[in-house]
Image (cartoon, rainbow, N blue to C red; front, side, top):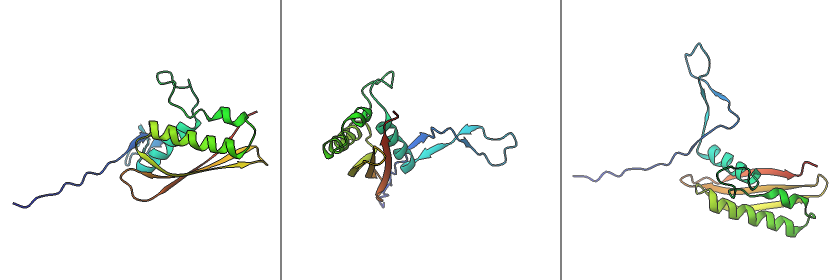
Length: 140
């Protein structure tokens, strides 16, 4: 009797938080469900949410956040950029098990008074490296 090897593939699914409707083929009434994000896109959305969330914005898990807004009111320097990078690395390691970070680049953009963040990461189960870019700036 030959041994069969089972390939276990992980498929990550999340709701698309832009709430774009899912098109159902052959439906005359229009879309009936919210679209979903899978694999890399689901992980990217989760990372973006973690980065942009501050403490106490989640009612039942107030500590699940990067709380980067406080750094945006500090003087722009390499020290602040390194602190932002370390904070992102810690929050992703703590709250996003689907992602393994390869590198984080935080560059202070003095002209726009913002930080350009670039995260290179791997999604567990997918061998291709991914990149997420974000622009962190204060509103006032």
